[in-house]
Length: 119
View 1 (cartoon, one colour):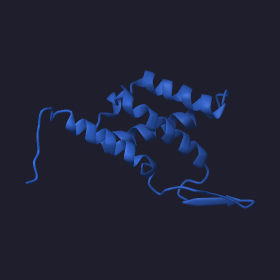
View 2: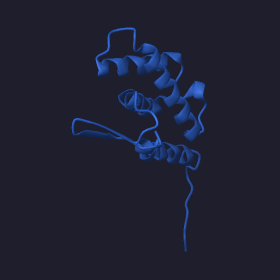
View 3: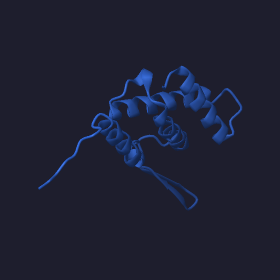
């Protein structure tokens, strides 16, 4: 569940990937994790304080993407010296296949034994 301990694990994963050892960036990363948790909870219909472990990978990826985009919030692209970064306007868009698969699996978990015919 995405309790504070899970958010702490996500924070550890994000800081490890980014190679951040200092305390200066932690409040910003914690905010990105919180925002990602809220977005995922809203889309999946899960309780923000009780997100399943299955969603932590998506939340980690979203937090990393938000960190990479920092300073360019509200933009869909930014360029510097011939290199252009592009982002979706919707932070959830890159993760929709995973989120939809989660929702589908959740919806089907209560339908064990059903048979459907489209004759």
